[in-house]
Length: 319
Image (cartoon, rainbow, N blue to C red):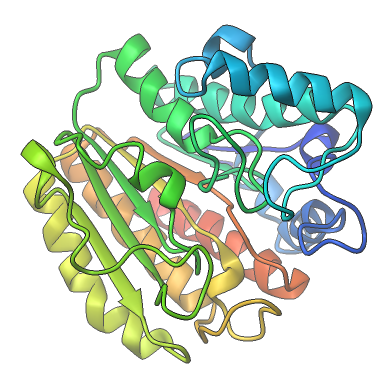
């Protein structure tokens, strides 16, 4: 077993779902855990418990007014948090705060040296904006983690890498003018897929121009296409020289996802994770935090996320 890799599991993460009729349904967590155990990865990593964050921590990224709205609808359990993609349910505030709290707990472990890599399956809720929900995402744990890294651990340069099929608009537009966040996003072309953003010309604003790399991928892009552009990703991260790397490894970019049109296999996820381990070792003292993100084909997400954890394990075994 490696003490350098932490994977966070708990039923409160499983509760982050919007019901059987919703793409972000209740079986996603269990699908990952079943495959995680089938591959005996639980014997090779440290399995850690979840944690709920404090409201004050949510306010590092989100507005108080929006948090109030989530708390109110969490009691009512009816209506939508956005235009129709993200329905309210009873208890959702505590469930969503657990996603954020678990990401923050993983960040703490990575930043204090208790582990070098960490993975949270139900996390990476990259669409939520500072003042409203978007695209199945109630609170943006990625954004809160960025704020926490700076407030608590004095990290200045952070690299955020996202291979989910959907553009991480909640992260991108929140840090579009921030020159110290190196943002890299490979996603299905926004001309064809929600949220319709993340075009190549969107490279940051003001002093942050050139610190954001959006790579729209054409419908049907496969592993070969992914590998073809990955060298550009690595060069971008090397230029940024980050002190921490965050990876959102959504599995909806895999072939067979019901709501997207990319055709990767888990090999793309394994490659991204393995290469980011190398970059983390070179620039960040190994610090790499991965969040599961999207994925609505259960077999796909199980294989993709286990490929990420497996890449962490394999890299650690080489050290």
